[in-house]
Length: 81
Image (cartoon, rainbow, N blue to C red; front, side, top):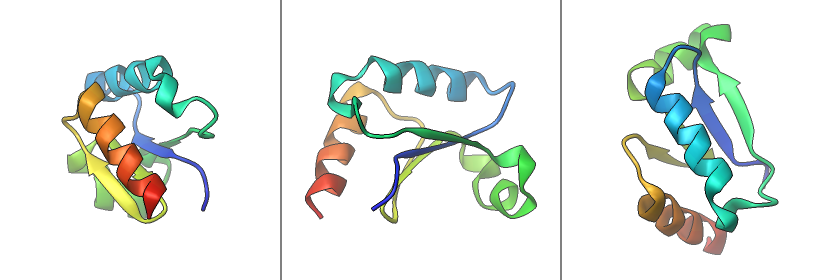
């Protein structure tokens, strides 16, 4: 299935908040979070730049803005598929 991915970039306040939120969620412990800076890849920057931060897992994506409840609901959904 692969890891849980946070598409992000440096200097993005929403991205930093999202990362803090993800680290604080016990539901995600052990999920293997990978943070990908879209600034390092033109294709990813084009795809995600205006939507950051974006969570991705197994082909499903959750765009910002999201809060604890949205992440937990989304995570439960993608883990069941």
